[in-house]
Length: 267
Ligand SMILES: O=P(O)(O)O[C@H]1O[C@H](CO)[C@@H](O)[C@H]1O
Ligand SMILES: Nc1nc2[nH]cnc2c(=O)[nH]1
Image 1 (tube, rainbow, N blue to C red):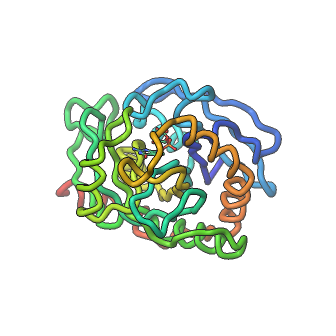
Image 2: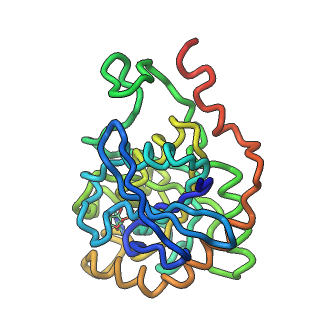
């Protein structure tokens, strides 16, 4: 049973980092999900490309609830993910790794919770207001930072990610506003992926890879081609970073992620 899962973002579509890969189809109250399960250092790891293998699913249409529920069903406790981002912070350059620690959510049309009270399509028919002060698991963040340090990668140990609805890129004015609000990087997928993991008391962290300077900061037109091309160039480093992080993940969970529902339902 995989304790750890990797969710691959743009440019990270296949589990080449794993051996003996099999696919398991998991039924969830939100639909079926195909999850790859393989081995790394004799440990079972689950892998899920959030956009599908051919990048066929745009960020606003991803079935985040099915994806996270499927990993939970498989017994996953810890989720590491990648996200390709634009940078608003001149210190965070294309090719740099940012271990996210904060989030700003500007998405609009997504499904943000599993807990819809009586309308929940499962037996958790309650309302839950989960603490999200620190959206990322401190233990997973520490593991990613230790690995980036060991590998001597260009990395930033913190970063605020602004999640936009997409699928378009931002206007110059939106990036100006996000900078005033304190965002360091901008993407389209961390929300609701991070909160949904927290709602199922799973640990979640994401390593953002800067693929471009954001709209109005970059002198070039923004293209998805540029994003995928840079991610392809970084694919080996991303693989090493994720795999090296795994050995730094404590077996025992001492973070508060595992108690996220305590006090959240008013019980
Ligand atoms: O966040 P990931 O999945 O890496 O994808 C990023 O890349 C796409 C834009 O090129 C958007 O979907 C953005 O969120
Ligand atoms: N929203 C958004 N996502 C990205 N992913 C990679 N670059 C960007 C960007 O500039 N904006």
